[in-house]
Amino acid sequence: MVGVSRSHPDADGRDVPETAVRNRSQYADTLHRPDPDADEPEPACVEADYRGDADFTDVPVAAYPHYKLCENPECFGSEWW
Image (tube, rainbow, N blue to C red; front, side):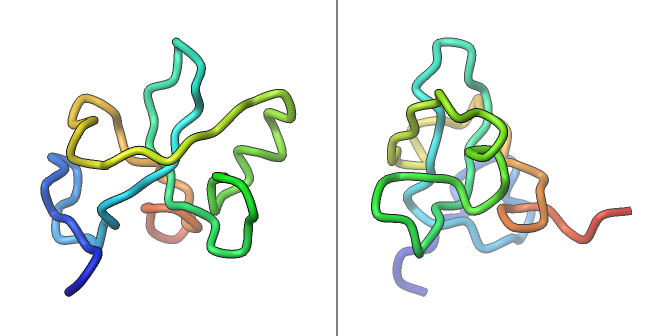
């Protein structure tokens, strides 16, 4: 599959794109699936709605193995409980 990486430790068989979105904050620790409809880098989940002042950027997933994958269903999670 083109553009899909399974190199992240949390991938566990999930299709994880080679590029994800992260908050530029020094406290960020989560990778998000990019929103395909956004003009600027933005997560597919509601994270950007809750953090209006956040600045997101595209990053290679393989470069952030210490970050967790967002568990929101719109990103990398499964259905809510």
